[in-house]
Image 1 (cartoon, helix red, strand yellow):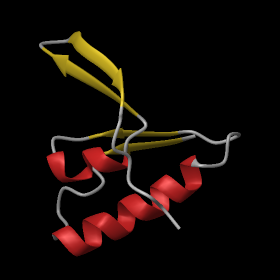
Image 2 (cartoon, rainbow, N blue to C red):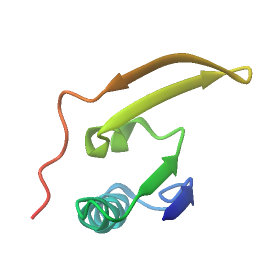
Image 3 (cartoon, rainbow, N blue to C red):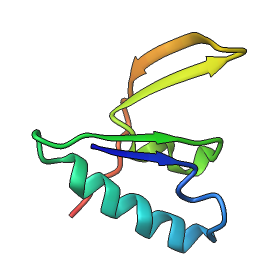
Length: 71
């Protein structure tokens, strides 16, 4: 299990995508899990599931339709 809090926060777009590609590859193995907490909308395309939390409450929980293809 990898818990990543703002893994792309201090990165430019290219390096942010590189980090997220690595995390996405790790998550493809069904015996592994990756949880990413972020405010960065650029990485939403990597998500399988998106949970929006506001003021400590879940306001939406959905499966992502447009996930990033990872080689």
